[in-house]
Image 1 (cartoon, one colour):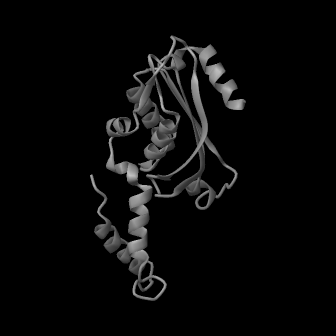
Image 2 (tube, one colour; image 1 turned 45 degrees about the vertical axis):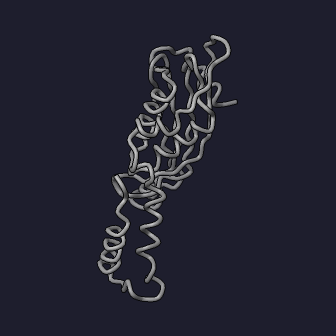
Length: 192
């Protein structure tokens, strides 16, 4: 699915009018085009399914020896937009761990997967689930853990207005779901 920037421009003009402003005044003349370009960038992930993202960023390398070591990439900075209010989710960090089978994923690919999964109208819980699913497909490992911490402007800047409120979610798949020792190891590594 391609993002329809012309339709976005028209709708933004309508929103400006609905807000009581003039989309033809100097400061707003190019706003619909700027917003359309911004949406095309920040919602890029909407152009791809999870399977397509796994294909784009599924570059793996053979593991030289058989091992059960955990791979963890932590504090990946991303942002997203809440699907309920289209409000920004910011100061968002994603940490992803998995247990490799015969191959490991290129480390930058983990960050790219997190970034692309976030670039959709989302729920924080779904971002974690999408990342886990994509990592599973890309690595052929069922054992994945994702931890996400974020501020939500729908809670900090409007509504209840609690600026220090942070939402933390975890997503566990495979052995991370059932092995408390593995979960504890994940949480300890996050603190290092």
